[in-house]
Length: 308
Image (cartoon, rainbow, N blue to C red; front, side, top):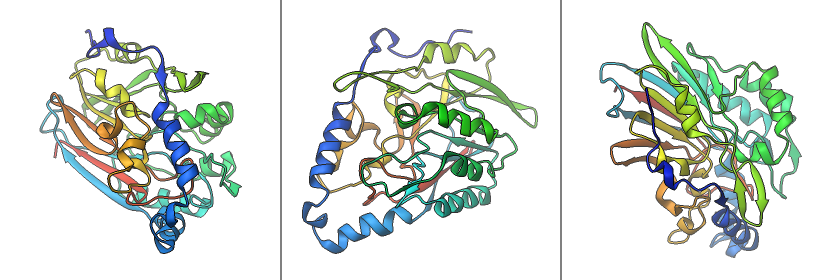
């Protein structure tokens, strides 16, 4: 069976991080932008909202998913474990909240460690991984890797996940069976893994190779850290789940869309996106990047119900 990515002939080999670097300059230089318009607002963005936690539900039946097949998925994205805004006790709350959802499947979409100049204390890899090891789901807990995992200690992240018995899907797919109803869970390698020049990155992602692992007609759920790959994901994939953008992280009206870390601006910044009858859900994630602040995008666990 052939699964050909849409527009695969136009897929770029190199990816630009222009928007991410622009956002870095903007946030680093403008973090004190009148305290995000006021001192109180800035305090909220830096000290209160990052430590919150919500569950965001989505109920959908994409064309490539059987209408009579119900599957629940808990999505944990962009943990970025590290003080001040993702201390170990907050990681523990995330795990407890995820387990309380009693989903069939739990997926981890990468970027497990915090990395920014304002980080006060790291959370050791063994500690955040031990908390994630407490996650429970009948169909398992499955992980992919994100760009920060590659840039800041990929070997240590791999080791921590392995010791926590959290399998990594990297350009691979696994056939899962739920009471005799099967589906494929596919995981893509990171799209920004290696910096090869100023603002230019080469990924380790292989979408055609990943989909070649799908050898039956059963439906497919695809995990990708960065949502930009969605432009070439074929309709054969029932649902793509992604993170990376943090939903914009600091959503200042009229300004934030320009600084979403994506080549497509706000197009894939957040939420449930439908294009050409293909479905993508982008999580706002849990932790922070560049600066330890969130505004207008509280940390979230995503809960998806397919076949709703």
